[in-house]
Length: 263
Ligand SMILES: NC(=O)c1ccc[n+]([C@@H]2O[C@H](COP(=O)([O-])OP(=O)(O)OC[C@H]3O[C@@H](n4cnc5c(N)ncnc54)[C@H](OP(=O)(O)O)[C@@H]3O)[C@@H](O)[C@H]2O)c1
Image 1: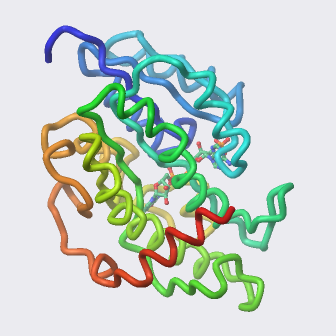
Image 2 (image 1 turned 90 degrees about the vertical axis):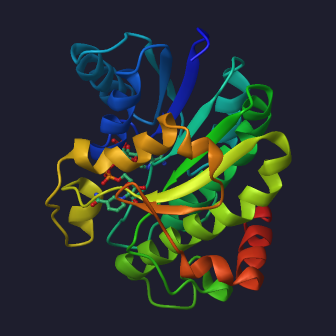
């Protein structure tokens, strides 16, 4: 630590895991945390809870709907200061198929494009603050990505299938971005947080046997510790690197990246 404040932005910081990630980052001296949230009342409440815990009081919020490209780019335009850590965490699992006002299926828009746009929109901030890093909160519950039907227009919508696809996409985009961000000294890694009882997990029919603070440990560790800077394009569970089978499929990865660019 060289005495300068390190700024971290956490999306979905009103949720179970995101709030705990923000609190754990805020507990470190010399950090400022921006909660990127869509609900102002919940954001204010999250700040009250975070500043009650031991740590510093440099916590504020910015409103954003990560499922909408204009909102994400609007946020990036408003945030003019440095950014050392971007934590992509906001996600949804609606039981019925929904679309954004722009007509994009909501899980794909939030869980995949939301991460993609935040990285794209904040690359310049991260580049100017380099060395800097991105943490993508993904999941081990991932798979069956269908590049020909990313928005469940052909397949019958099932929120578990759409979720698993979205989390595979988060892990693949982590690898796709790693090579692109490396020249700017921006590292990017993905992780499974923990199994935590939340709105998101309940919608999928799961509970969760870990506390939010336990679930936040791996993402917060990647956000704060040297490993999150030294490694890039990797996937972690329980603070250990795990070989990610999705990283091997370069064609699918590049196809997904190109598909995201078209939105
Ligand atoms: N819980 C688990 O067991 C588990 C397991 C593996 C991975 N994960 C991952 O962990 C992350 C957090 O999940 P969680 O369990 O903490 O879920 P959660 O409690 O339901 O929180 C989700 C957060 O995302 C926010 N959000 C949703 N859509 C948004 C949008 N369009 N714009 C801005 N914010 C939006 C929500 O805001 P509101 O408060 O306004 O709704 C909330 O803050 C997700 O990426 C999830 O895939 C969770």
